[in-house]
Length: 487
Ligand SMILES: [Zn+2]
Image (cartoon, rainbow, N blue to C red):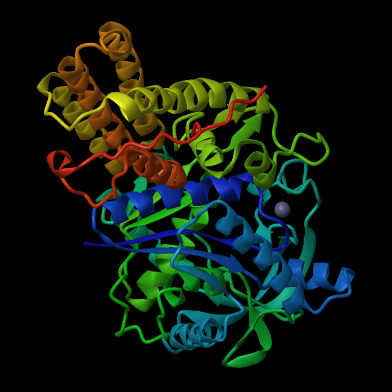
């Protein structure tokens, strides 16, 4: 089965932060899970590189905007490599094919009379790159940037967003266009039923760093048509609405809650306007606070992804971020909490179990024997694992895996295999059960911690190939502990 998954196309005006890493790690976990199941998966990440903010920042640093984007985009790519993200493409909106495709899209919409020229007067926040309505402002300031937006009156082109409101509500309601979790779906539906969607300004005259409108070169288009189209150009769409690449539509688009509104209004409206099928599902996750406070430069409490990698290692960083609170809700983290979790779950949990079992097995294991009293527990765990992974309940999935780890810890305490070294057959049976369990743990943690999983397979002396456990010949070779203990 084909599976197409995306993260948002991040705006590269600044270095990647923990929120970017969180979405992307989650998407990678789901990608690796689907790959494990044999799905034909395409995983897209990307960079949104146009707009006034980048133009101004590049100017301030005395750089050509393309060079500015190249540098920041490279930082994103560097981080994704570091975090072992297995994306198929890193699409950049300054890519030539992307630019020409966006121009085709603009021309199509213009020909369909869904883009028209008008005059816009509004409050524009440079930080957000969008006009703000009075409702969005707090004390006349943009709540995100703590700045008063500028009053701008200008000639611009509009997209007839208002045409599509009814259709979008319908598609969300009947789940043709799914929005999860359910609270987010309800939130967006009540917004769409209350507020009338206004036509959307899609061009600027004084912004040079953007894609020119093909029918009026004195304007460039900004963010909406440009960035959203990269979900299509990233799978090599050339702009012909009758020739959509096979991977379309996305099975899943992951994002944080701050961009739900535009993804549930402008994005489907553009697709409807072009007669292109909508994505199957948007899944929306929450925000982090650090020790109960918002992450901010002024508070000095920013945790960068690279700090976590340096402190805990790549796999542990992936695990720790997803094991803090349910994916889809807001949650609080702190370095102390992460350290505690590292020690309890990774050093004393998974790492210790693997080390104890392999130490015993290295010298006492004879050959694999089927042991049914433990098979039942593995089977139950595997069923729950499948169910939660399918529902994108990553936090719950990890809980299920770690319950199995505690189960094996208890099993060892009960059977005390180290005390029956003089009864080789009995000991072999217990070790077989434990090795079977560790094998399945390595399979289940693979999407979350691919390198750890690989290390376990290596120590078990097996190559992972979806084979049944009975056919596996373990060749135990204990190595150093999976997770170094920290003070
Ligand atoms: Zn703003």
